[in-house]
Length: 202
Image (cartoon, rainbow, N blue to C red; front, top):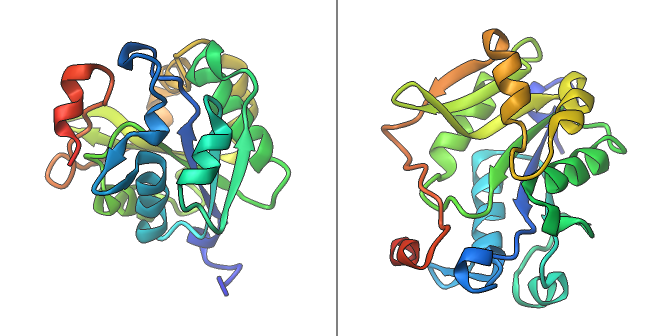
């Protein structure tokens, strides 16, 4: 059982995995195979290995198939009926679900970045202490994922999350409050967006 006084126990993992893979011929990224399992299962495992105590996964495109094929036991599955609108809608759905829990922060990981493993996620998680409530991985000084949002920021992030922009506008507006954690030595923040990118999957 997690000690409720432990700040890390306040952090919920959030996987955004609802996209339909438009540039991949309509193959949802959640179902792409990596190391013998669907990407969504891999991402949830990364969060779990890094120390996230509870994990919410936002599903959208072919959600029933994702549920059937991916081993996501112990995760809270959140349906995003507006997934076609873009990542912003998934972030809003995930934060709305977390707002109904006692989580104090959300650690957000994208399903299509398998080059980001537990080491990078754990660094971002460790940087959260209840005071640093906006924390982001950085790659050679450039902000990337995963990103941690304290609950005081959720409403503002949700309001700014439209289309595929996610939290980008909100983080830019609060740049001075974001603690960057360098992760280029332990992770590669590439996306699986196109057919050419599929060669990065193992």
